Length: 117
Length: 114
Image (cartoon, rainbow over all chains, first blue to last red; front, side):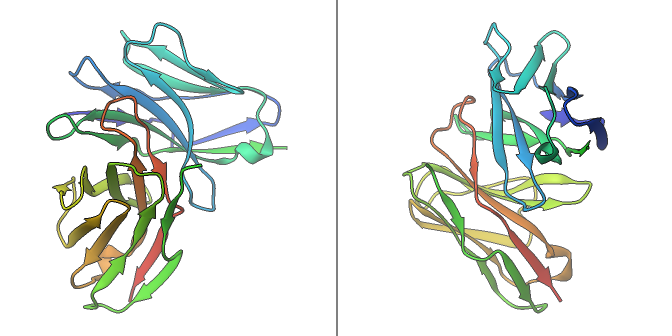
């Protein structure tokens, strides 16, 4: 069965510092996608970054980068130069086969990030 | 921008009521999904649909049903609401079914069953 594990229920970081949010995954499928979403207190889920299982390079999107270590099955999110607005819940997710050729996202339980001024 | 709209942000219903949660997307996406989110449990998939009138059970379908009569609309139905269905419900859509397609989410419905 496919599984996403986020071992940090909560993290604290000082404004302007970098922070790494951990994510490990488990799947036997060679083709998969890894995603990170941000959920502020307002409740909406905001897509941050994507990494494909066959991608050679680590994904980057502005201040977000994904540290993809395929052999270790880890996909950690790195946020550089943290801002107060980064305080939110962060979810790691994997898209896996779900009935025929259809794929569904499986989520980790999330990490609550608090950025301190 | 793709928009996924959930009809209610907050909803309070009584035990035993039939509850409809509506979700509409405006970008012709094939796939639509309903999740519930609970503290400490993360997001759990209830049902999903990959075409009009098609539906598949997710991980926790008990107590729920769905309807997809039109491509843009995916409804979640609680046939007889119970207090353990108090939760945040998130609808999502996806352009395709491949592993590289992410989701676009609605803003969620916080349902309280009293």
